Image (cartoon, rainbow, N blue to C red):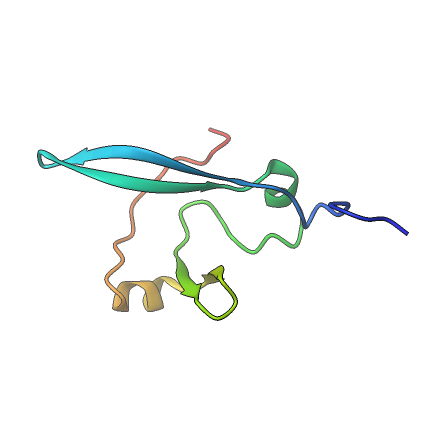
Length: 88
């Protein structure tokens, strides 16, 4: 029997806070780093630059990240931007 993190579908990420300046105003930005072994797993459902819905499940005290279509994201106010791949 194995305990702890053993599959590529599990890993310990990191939440990082960074400052960002836009139009002369400073904002706090939160970044969540996904471990490489998780992001490279064949079950990883996200592509770089694709939209996702992020919400807080207060009952479970969890952050939920869900894959959504460009159309759904646009209806929620998202704007598609051309971004470089992490490996470029």
